[in-house]
Length: 158
Image 1: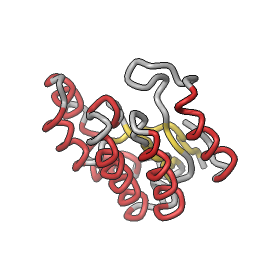
Image 2: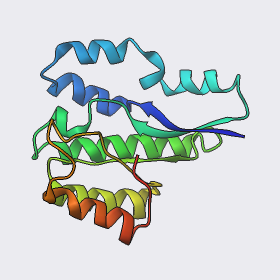
Image 3: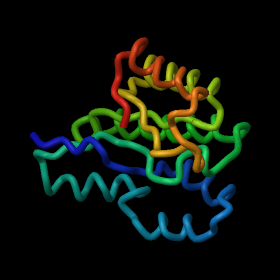
C-alpha cells in the first residue's frame, strides 16, 4: 500500500464559494482547469488504475483566510471540511482520511472548527499554510492553535 499524505482537493461547494468571493478572478479559472482537484469521481477513476494507492486529502489553495475575512473564513473552512469528509466517507478505500482546513484569520473560530473536524468528522490532523494571509505563524495569537492540536488532540499538522 502507498499512501499520499499531502494530496489537494477543492470540494465543489468550496469552489463555488471561491468563484463568488475571490478577489483574483484567475484563481477560479486555474482551479477549474485542473479537473482532478474538484471532479472527485474523475480522481477516483484515475486512482482505480493504481489499486495500491490511497490519498489523505487536504484543501487546495487558497485557504479560507485568503478567500475571506474573519467573518467569512469560518464558513469556508466548514464547507471545505464537510466536503472532504464526504469524499472520505463515500470512497474510504481511496481516501482514508483528511487534514482539516482552519480559518486562521479567526483564532477562536479555528479552535472551534478544529475540535469539530477532529471529534465529529474524524479529521486526522490540521492543515496550516506557511503564513496566515502574509503574516508569520510564530505570532503569539496562533499559539492556542498549536497547543490545541498537539497537546489536546495529539494530531499532526500539515
